[in-house]
Amino acid sequence: MYPEKGLIFFPIRELEATPKDYQLPYDDIFFPAADGTKLHGWFVPSSKPETKTTLLWFHGNAGNISHRLENLALLHRYLEISIFIFDYREFGLSAGHISKAGTFLDSRGAWHYLVEECGTDPTDILLFGRSLGTALAVDLASTEPSLGVVLEAAFTSSHDMLKRYFFGAIPPELLQSSYDNLARIHQIQVPLLFIHGEYDEAIPVEMAQQLYQAAGADKRFYLVPGSGHNDTYVVGGADYFHQWQVFLKECVENLRLKNAD
Image (cartoon, rainbow, N blue to C red):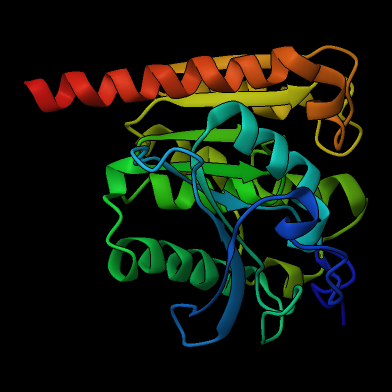
């Protein structure tokens, strides 16, 4: 047997810090996934009460939300929007057992929490997927309205990724459910920002470029010079956050024009 945990997912339970350690106000949120599994996340409100935009963050396949705090604090400072980040099942304080199929239920639960429980307009939600999380952002954006989508370190499909690590036949239990960004990317109708490290050692930049070519929506591609898989916001520095600022401004203007029609 080849369990998904230990080959695809590397969850860590212990939280190393909270937003408070970065001088950020936040709410501890416990909410149900689509199948009722109890999940945990943090809601960090915007420093500007009049700001409507909320970033819904889907993280990668390892660690937990506490390992994204430095990146989160910087995005919060530069964008001045609210951020909702949560852990998939078996990560951090979230219950359950991790699986690809389960992550889709988790992402839908996070979406439902923002829209149904918090009353957030879907068109005020900016979806952000990083690495494995790009599959969840693409899945949601292909069926639900949103403000825009940021895909950082995006891959074409889980099957393509597994082929990079299994030189023979891929164990069938790893193919029972799949992530397939390439099959869904053309369904997204809102603006897309692709971010990828020039020397990403985990997910080749060619995969993101293939997705970019297949996407039909308004799109832009930002290659972070000199960066790898995990250090894009560090190596990219001010220019990394400037790309976010420009994209967010374009998304808001795009929404304004649509509403004016």
